[in-house]
Length: 333
Image (tube, rainbow, N blue to C red; front, top):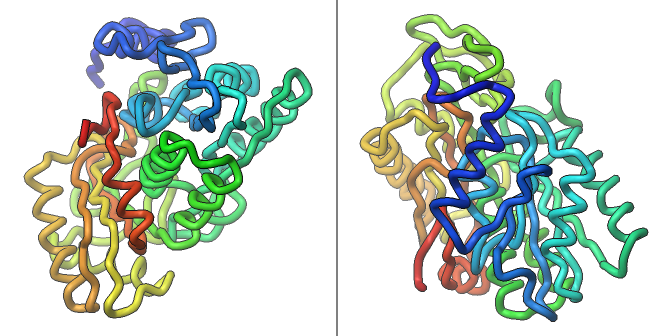
């Protein structure tokens, strides 16, 4: 398998160096693979950090910047950042008003963020609130989680929580806004092709020529079942229906929509899937108040897509629309 790399061992560090070279408003601790705002934390502002294994770009390093994250801890490919990395990200985000930890629900992430929070609080005067994202309706438990996995909704949490913090809201209120998003957001994805990590150099799993993995995780974890490939309309219905039923969303709801690519799916196909999802929303009496289409929570070179739906409220829409300036998301500035 051909990759644009020098060595599997240096992919993350060298990629982050390239990110910093392209975006001078960001800085990188190359030893710990932590990305943060070069201007430092704003005094009196709640800090917001996230992190996880690399390979999901632009999540999460690509969402560091005004209106979103203050710092991101970047583990090795599909590997949780260690506590030292999370502590460094916490310190880089600490402006004296507390720090939010946004954590995807994977066993390693949960454990290491919890340990890091205890270390950071013991070493300094910082109050930490944790928002646990567990939006994947595909499976209840997996090899990597107790409970549901954290996937595409993480992007919405980062955007909305980041905007609330940027506006100067206090720690408890910012945390409550983020937990509300988790409560009313759902996701599911599918894979058309497997993912190939640089270290392995071969696909993590096998799919037949006419097979898809339905309900796949962002690390290539198994989903609900293997299915025969079908039309975009049929696949969109298979993803959208369970998401709508799970919350449940009700006729008359407005929603914020993310049609997300897994890394190798072209935009022409993602927009086509969005067209199908729009029909499904209409058939349930739902209206897309905002829609984001593209690669935002990826799985390296996997071909596939995921849907995320979040029940919209006036506050969430205002925070979604607030200016954001990051490598991976930018508007209103």
